[in-house]
Image (cartoon, rainbow, N blue to C red):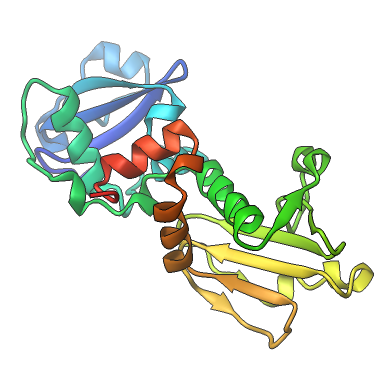
Length: 232
């Protein structure tokens, strides 16, 4: 709260809707009254509010930031898209951020990124999803895929700054030694263990796939990527 400056942007949510707020006056200048004490919000900054919408309208990193139990926290990597959205929906254009300056990997939700990886594995690597396995909450992989030769595939996808250690995912090979394990982390931080069955996917591969197969993308995912100027 003490670090917030005028024109900083703050994401919040209420009753399932997400709001983008622009700081207009600082914490140190605000004096709580009795009503603030009743609702236990003695520490606050003054802001202008914008109703952005539901989850599908909000950058993925913003959604995931609400999972930790913190009253307020910083979110890295969403500055540009937040400023862009403010200027888009507000009558006051403050930031003048061009869409082409935004990294779409910071905008997409974890689910959208997972969907891109699974499309890539199906189209490029010629695997097919066992649809029933998508419903299960596996500890170390998203679902189970198989190719025309019967070779199985176990994918794991992580968004944000998460790194992946190959040793955490080799267990599937204990009962399926001929399978492939595909790992993708947006951070591209991998700890290799030398196992030939473990494959690492990099953003450049997926970006090439997106450009070549944009017609396969879900409409919302396409919207976010296009908003970031990727297709220009």
